[in-house]
Image (cartoon, rainbow, N blue to C red; front, side, top):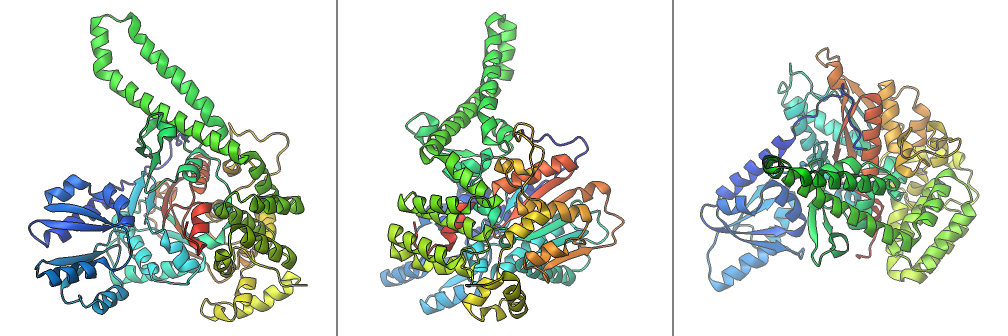
Length: 598
């Protein structure tokens, strides 16, 4: 199910320009140090850099040796000081990406090398991972903003939006929800006003843009993924658009790095499929491939020559990809059977629907006692907490105690983080929510004022998931079996049990062309002041451009959400483009909150 787009679906813009811009800027910076040079690259930058400028491009511009910097202390200073001691003279340039912060210069000054190095900025903030997916590759954005309240990346984000609107703008209709969305939007608009007129008079390519904070919908990000691309990410970790398949997948003694995008024709047809359909699809494909190979049996020499020169290479490539994805499926099946995935999914669905809460709680306790995995146990506790509007004090204390006994007391600080972010909270004793909610929401309107006390701010972040779920009809009523082969709505990405909240909000706002009629939902999301619409009276926006929608996820988005919106696009004749601070999943969210490094 590659979701063949409707014949009337709008064309996607060509994002390869973003790569060229980033590459040209990097080359320009390298050329400023003429002659041979060594390049020290921070580990996190290796994969993104590789997608922009491979080793041969770097060599062309006289990069002699490449070093991967693993440890975090300011390496430049130790290098420079070592050279000074040895009496070597070299030139040093420090390139910060995507932007240089004042704190960076402070560190260089403290180390006594500020005068010896020149500093530059490589404003590389948008990496096209696929035809419809742009990533800022800033996994730290989530923790920095949603836990620490650190706003330094908002400028990076506004600059990225500004670049997009300079190249592909203007964007006539803008919608957004969340504190970070609102701040980023306002800063971006200021940048646009300063450079007034760059996009004036141009026909918009992308008619609508939607900004959404991750904390508006934690539930979706905490669920186990069951569409193929999401499962591959949960199982093997897709990093910067590619995945390392180990020997258990490649059926050889080597690991293989595989790029996963629309160019992989096999992957493109199964990426959005529910996992239960993937195996049968691949085996059918294998049979078709075999039939094409078998055609050569009755060929004469001329036909054989044509076959070899025109078809064989393509068939071999397809065969290689097929066996890789079949290997990946087998490996996923093995792992999931071992974990008793069915039982896990059943518990998640019960939490989403609000049934058998006691049973689900004992399942989580057993999960903790069996020490299945510290990250997985945390995730289930957070899912229980958010769907239940916080845990009752008795459950909170007992689960926390069991967790710390099972996985170790060093996890104590993690609980304080989860509480601060509103992911794992305790209901105040004897609270009927509404009374306290109204008291607190008056008090806690601003993040700065929100530091009244931790207890208060976690109260203010009540999730109200049940009420929102009812209002937006997130749990589909299904008579009989939900047919995953022919999905009827976005809930198929969670086996028909739940429509992702983030995607439902986007669907509703696009349908209503704004937030009217959604006031109650916005209030329940604690976003009363934080939902906005900005529509320009632009008669240049064609109906085609209005069906091309850029969705911006602040704090990360999951492959399940991407699949759900691709499905919605096919149903409604939209095309979605995704911009995210990073691709995330439940394990990455939990690791970002954890004080214990795996």
